[in-house]
Amino acid sequence: MKKQCWCFRILFYILSLVILALGITLNTKTGLGVSPIISVSYSVSQVLHLNFGNVTLIWYTIFVFIQLIIRGKKRRWYDLLQIPLSIVFTRFLNLFDAAIHWESESFAANLLLLLAAIILTGAGAAMSVNMRLVPNPGDGIVAAIADCIHRDMGFAKNMFDLMNICMTFIIGIVSGHFLLGIGIGTVFAVIGVGRAVAAFNYLCKEKMDVLAGISEETVSEAEVCTE
Image 1 (tube, one colour):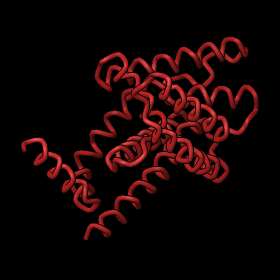
Image 2 (cartoon, rainbow, N blue to C red):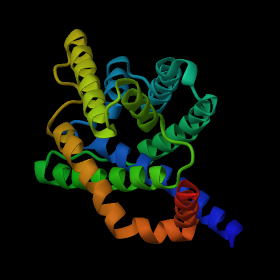
Image 3 (cartoon, one colour):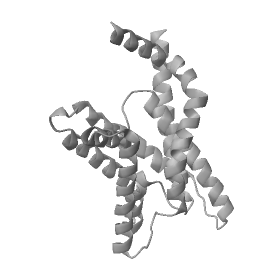
Image 4 (cartoon, rainbow, N blue to C red):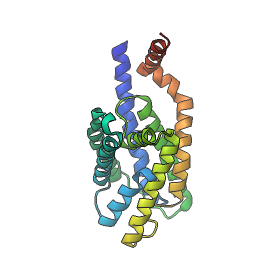
């Protein structure tokens, strides 16, 4: 039974990377602005005409090393596993980017695509976190910041999003591409992804936790804490 649970857990985790990559890729296709976490890598790739997935890999790798620096003596070397995870994840980004060709001048159509992107991004992010394996670098650095400033994850996420938006804004101004990667889609992503995560967890988390054996782990941890 335990082996079967791990099979589901790994399957859900891989599926989460695919769904998250698809959501992020669709987000970049709308032309309405991308989510803050990828806005810097997206703007750099657009300005320098570089591969978006490869730039994101470099950016995520920087996230990992920043985590190690922030944590100082409390650094967790297993966080380096986020680098091979990023390699796999950004290959999915490149795959979807090459496969999906979307060009529409319809605001309504792009808005619907943005909605789909936000839902997929939220679902993928929720699945990834819920499986309790290797966190993606975006979640990892937010957790490190939260621990460093002794604030909750929500506050750290908002602060990190704002920092990314500011960096993207500066890149756009310096390169002569005003508001490159920033738009109504960025605002919707900030608000919508969190709601999508909450909705996904409400509908699916309990069932997926049972299949992946995570609910049993939670019970075991609770028993240890009460002993």
